[in-house]
Length: 232
Image (tube, rainbow, N blue to C red):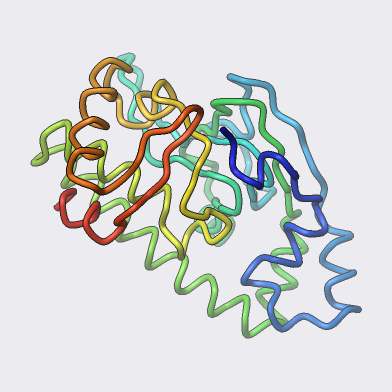
């Protein structure tokens, strides 16, 4: 079964208003920001953005699921992160002048909020709350990528799956995610780089340990702290 966010999809305005970075905006300021954001619908396998493109937007997931990937000329693909509803990404790219260094691909039909660069810059110049949000966001993202590097080099498959799930339920990066997330075993496989069958085995291990419950169409976390400890 799907979670409430899947049953009752948020509007673009609700997504913006409920974002932590909007906490100190007046109604007039929020209206200005809202005018600088538009919504896109991305089909399964479609791209929100591509590596090498100019960086013109900051993105937030309203509904659906994305993966951030980097494809090498050798043909190898590295999955950097999964982005569930409530997550915003690309702030590091927005703060630099280089082209984008990764692809963002929809794992299911996804609705994305796209904030224009000039609106992002206006928030930087006018909102203390937004700047604090970015500091926390960038620090949390750095920790996420350090953990990813550690996971790829040191952890076994069960721990990698646990780390992937713990990341998807990160309350700082993805505050819109409750204890249940509509995510399939195939999607977890895409995010971890292992087969759906191997994901199934890992989920059984994690469920037996009491960290989560596997349900039809999703995962419910029972012990996030324990899941993080298991992931190392």
